[in-house]
Length: 194
Length: 194
DNA sequence: GTCTATACATCGATAGAC
DNA sequence: GTCTATCGATGTATAGAC
Image 1 (tube, helix red, strand yellow):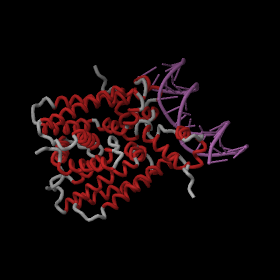
Image 2 (tube, each protein chain N blue to C red):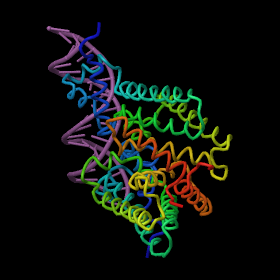
Image 3 (cartoon, rainbow over the protein chains, first blue to last red):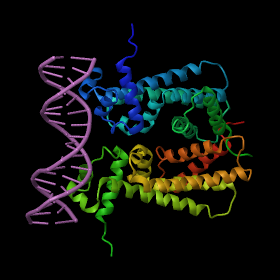
Image 4 (tube, rainbow over the protein chains, first blue to last red):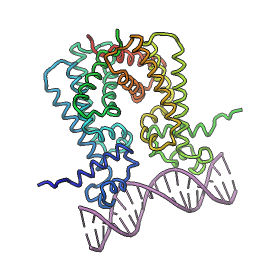
């Protein structure tokens, strides 16, 4: 028996939208309360604190992302395809969680200023390990270049995927497919015509 | 006749360090004052407001960057080299202005929340135009691929250079040289071994 | 140019009635 | 589960003495 909607869910979505658009710190408890049409005191019936809302928004998104990446690697295929699959799934999940994805990249400072977001960092570390496993695998099996720094490559492609949700908001999976293919093409084969 | 050091300059550097490490909003006027050993009220003798400090820190950095990019393009050479030179100069200037560079990428929200930072955005727009000119020139003269989205490429390499100062703090120009060469190699020729 | 003192706003969070 | 009312902390900025 689930209500037609859960007020708690409405608060989460509304807060996420505010956090994404204005930043976490400038989005006050009173603003969130106004946006869901209750008073600020009532918010504390649903959540212990403002940071608890941030944690739940980011935790859901990053957990979904982490699980999706692990899942896509169960397909047996070559390293280049594995890398492409990581790119595609990352773009897809981030596109389905635009507010959360935006918040995460914009609030690295906020998330690091105290241990209260450690659970979030644990999930992110897991995601990074997945990427590294694929990249190092590709270097080992000869798919990727040995004369370039694999860690640098990791950082560059991770940031590219991470931040591309800033400008690419695709509504259909076709666009995500195209974007993933182009990003992978640039990072694997380069933009040079020769 | 310049004093051995200018208190105003000390404030700027100290504030920049705080802004970079803790974020602009959490770095309070009192913290800045404490760090330079005066009281918060005295800060207002040197600057009209906290945002005026932010504007001056970022303005100096971005103006230097913009001028450097324009300067490096006066050398007549091929498009691939021009692109490499943009990468190198960007890394170099950002490395020489680590606090400001860090602040800029971490505070996009803060900088966009009101028109008081419009002068900053004007300089950034100029920098973006410089990059676009080089990339479009390379596409036109056949140096760069026609089958990939040049705007996407622009966004990716710009972010890569922009954000790589997060993890690469080189103290000597040799490392910057190496980093620029590797970034350019990945973006022009790819990480694939084949 | 630096100080003390403080005005004034706004924040997150709590208490207790309904 | 929502309300009103408010506490206590903290923020930017100002006023005026020295």
